[in-house]
Image (tube, rainbow, N blue to C red; front, top):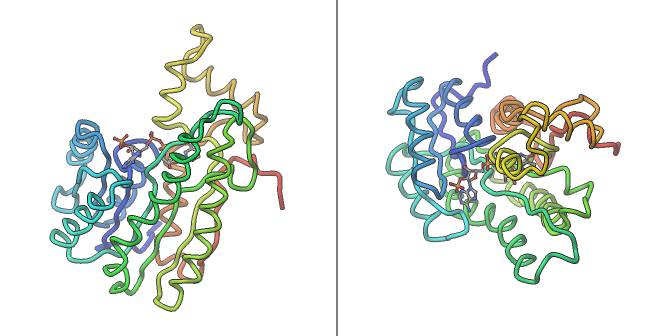
Length: 264
Ligand code: NDP
């Protein structure tokens, strides 16, 4: 199946691991040119090496960048334009969740979480906006979480900040509709990724291997499809929303939670 993104240029923030990396890979498979960023240079270069053996290096670009640093994001945007001369798709994926209850969360942690969820989108949107305005198929897709609609007490700050991001995504969709830029998001449940690998390393029951550990989480949480999602499953939804296949969809969400969402 073709996503109709051949020769289009995509930017993926946080493309060096997990969902972002699978999104970069799928876009390259589909013939797009892709620029991606991350903070850790070693991980970024490793992602480049991994993909350079499968895809044309001239279609790929990596750039060290913290999405919370406005100047750094602008530098990334300038480099992408210098290299590819256009941007059609911006996928705001960089970030992570924070596990903490109300009692545990300090004021600074609240501020950090709000800053991450807002500015990991605001800085890239501002930096790539002029380029997106020039595209005939411009799309922004934000990686969001089901927590936006279904808050969890053990991730209270992330849940609240995710709800704000959902609201912001809707506003951006309204704001840019007349300029032909679509803005959508995916709402993820639990997807196997670097974040979950790190939590696995800190698990209390060391007798469980990875498969047993994720199966236990899926069973305990009651995920109807009986397992965690794979990063490539989130990537397919992201690329659909970024692609011309979803040309009449803006301000919308795609649920990638294995049926975990109970609301209508
Ligand atoms: P990973 O940890 O595997 O990947 C996160 C990526 O984002 C890495 O490439 C990381 O690279 C990059 N990143 C993190 N912070 C920044 C930053 N400030 N600037 C630039 N790059 C950054 O996790 P996931 O694939 O799971 O995460 C992708 C997105 O999905 C995140 O926004 C996460 O919150 C969201 N999500 C994931 C869920 C899940 O179950 N997996 C559930 C709900 C939401 P580096 O650290 O080198 O910067």
